[in-house]
Amino acid sequence: MYIVPEREIATLMTRDAAFDAVEKVFAAMAAQDAYNFPVIREAIGHEDALYGFKGGFDKAGLTLGLKAGGYWPHNLEKRGEINHQSTVFLFDPDTGKAKAMVGGNLLTALRTAAASSVSIKHLARKDAKVLGMIGAGHQATFQLRAALETGTFEKVIGWNYHPDMLPNIEKVAGEAGVPFEAVALEGMTQADVIISITSAFAPSLMAAHVSAGTHIACMGTDTKGKQEVEAALLARATVFTDEVAQSISIGEAQHAIADGLIKESDVAQLGAVINGTHAGRTGDDEITLFDGTGVGLQDLAVAASVVDLAIEKGIAIEVDF
Ligand code: NAD
Image (cartoon, rainbow, N blue to C red):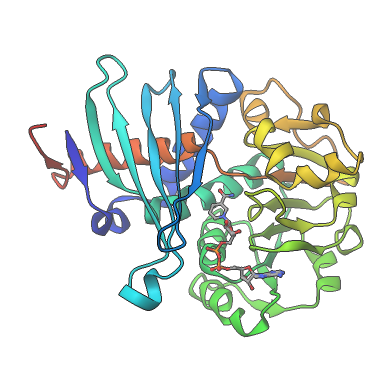
């Protein structure tokens, strides 16, 4: 089997490779060629840690495995290690033998950023120029970098609950040579695309803050109770997701469903749009919303891609196992 350590991921994995891997696996999920296994998430009663497994099998890409990891809230202050820790394990679907062990920390950020970029490619208006960012934490910088790589945006506007964090995303916009402006939430009406990536449990972005024709990628809500946007916005928008079951239970759609504003059948898989089996945007005035909840198959897809790159470049550590 091969080992690809966390320290190698940054030089190996490109945003293009992450984008392709995520786009393909979303398509495979919608074609029912790939499915996610039930997620396990446990408070282990040690170090206040939340630990779990996200697994799946992609029959189209022949990727089988799981991501194991979670959140250790005291890592940084006690040990200087980052609080989110994860490792991806891949298995040979023909034999069940272990195939690879891959550092999953950076890959998680890259695959999450790739998901919103895939949604922008397939759902945003082609003439989108202004990108709105809600959130300025760790993931927000990856989201912004990946979105700016699409090359379509000429201006970034940003709002964050903690305004002192805004320089984090201003720096990324500056590195890409794109002007940045901090705005009030009301200023988000300028945006053609909005990416929301916060850990909020109450909505910031209201339906009135969004103009007709905007595409919104809601990337922060991945747990019951979290919420980034007003439920009424989902009723006003055409809603897409990575996985419907997650969207309506732990994603942004959980609130609009609970309030009776939308039904499960109103939420479509982005993969079906990629496959051409479901309509995407149907007009320039339509608001589209991607509820990106994060699935294990995304992790496996980018891990498989990085293992191929590591073998190709002679960086993968081969062990007799
Ligand atoms: P972070 O701690 O670095 O940043 C948190 C962000 O949320 C900051 O911008 C902060 O200002 C904002 N925030 C905090 N409290 C808020 C509030 N009450 N109202 C509005 N904003 C508030 O976290 P991160 O690593 O950037 O992760 C952000 C979110 O993304 C988390 O909820 C995380 O679980 C989620 N996430 C989702 C996926 C996915 O696949 N969908 C993947 C990874 C992380």
